[in-house]
Image (cartoon, rainbow, N blue to C red):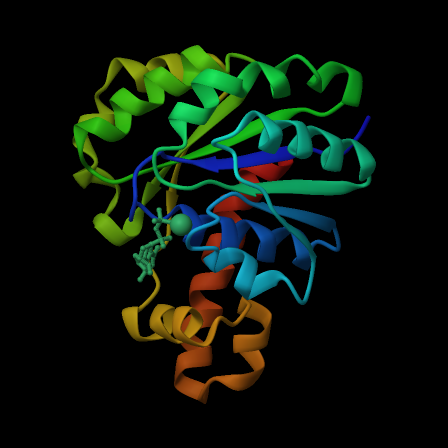
Length: 227
Ligand SMILES: Nc1ncnc2c1ncn2[C@@H]1O[C@H](COP(=O)(O)OP(=O)(O)O)[C@@H](O)[C@H]1O
Ligand SMILES: [Mg+2]
């Protein structure tokens, strides 16, 4: 078996896809996994900038057929690495058109595909998830309520939705990703720092908040990695 492949999706801008990708890479590295990052947000490659010095990182445009070919080839060349794909807004279009390039090759590559679908509290997050599931039925989807938008019970639309039942019946989990204090998330973004670098360079108070968040985040994402 090759290592798992994770797609961090949501198909909307600003829901926290990059943030969750960053957290997932950090969790995997903390567990001594080799990570291969595929950054498909080629116009704003924020995760690539933060992690290109610590993991193998490729910029691949998943709006094109060529991009999906490259994705499959690079994954196949690194079976020992866990793959993390950070997606861009409106990624569903590429998935609908070219998703079979990936799903038809997973078995031969011996990769399992897991999706972390990041949502805010709005309805379109869920409608886009239905579209994604139809286009890529070969994936297990875990839904990530981003705590940045409020605590778990505020996601009532998702919590009481039919799609939640569908997800959980197919072994998907419903998770809540913790909220990091804005001033510390701003530190990460403005300095393009990885989480582990920030843990050596930020002022002591900021590091303490980052550590609190990181421990919580490792626990939440650990449920998916171990599950
Ligand atoms: N869990 C979180 N804790 C703190 N800030 C967050 C969190 N999630 C998102 N943010 C903030 O929202 C902004 C947008 O998130 P980002 O991950 O870039 O979204 P996307 O990649 O989906 O466009 C980030 O720059 C960050 O400031
Ligand atoms: Mg992003």
